[in-house]
Length: 144
Image (cartoon, rainbow, N blue to C red):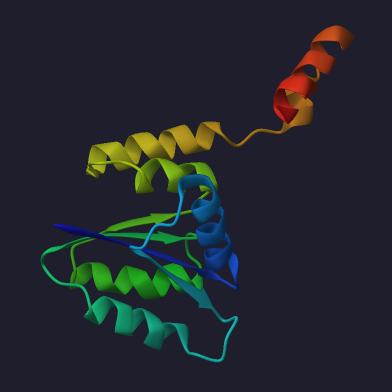
């Protein structure tokens, strides 16, 4: 089975995610990005062209930036016709975990999404109740 990954977002966020992934994980050839509304091309047409290339032998994982956003809504329509995983509200940690995973199942995706939620922190609040020495240590830990 051939794994294909689509990152489709508003603006150039998709390209930014791919660039960061290339730095962290090395160049990954099976990632396609669609930077919706940042170019003159119609995102509906770009998504349609991408989906038409998908075969039954492909394992497709699609990442979008915003639940209910126009990009997610366009791709959501293809769930009726194609079998694929659609994940929205992505962050870099989630992308790394799933893209580097050997096996993708509904369960591994749910677990990765739950773990990605834990990565979102308001750092000021996290270190708010610590002593000055602990705060300095926490800041050093965040920087290293």
